[in-house]
Length: 177
Image 1 (cartoon, one colour):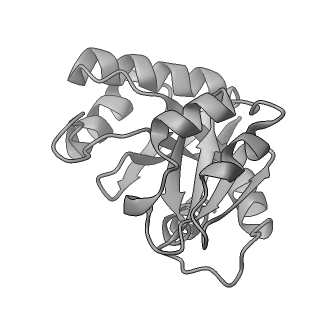
Image 2: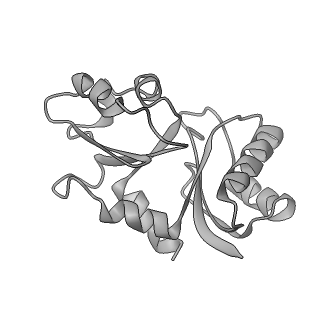
Image 3: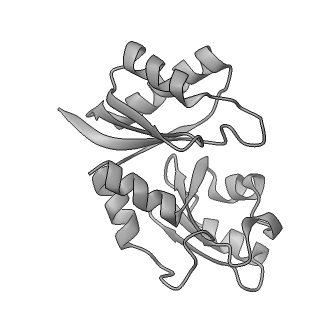
């Protein structure tokens, strides 16, 4: 049995670094993995596909292929359509801007005190909510001025993650339906 899902690559095609051309990636995934119905959404590493039941194995398979083919070793984090819908249903800040509100999808369970560790780093208007394996971040005035850098987030959470804005998460949920 296969499941429709999104596989999210962390930090690809950002400022000319970690280049992973999406057309080449799609072709390789179709040829060399167990994934089917492969497509991508924008160039920031959003793979939409049907994957065999073991999503963790599919993520590991994609990570190994991206490292081999493009020389980029980056976490690949998977969420099924049902999980994406659950994330959207848990929206903690309905008044936030779609562009400024991000969901950080985590590879595993976060450290128990992660939210408390991050709160002192917040700017006056920023808000966070850790719900399961997702960290919601309302950057309010933009991520560029935030003290919630990838290193700070990784250390506090104790696990790698990758963030998408609310608009992108909605599109991923629609396209995995």
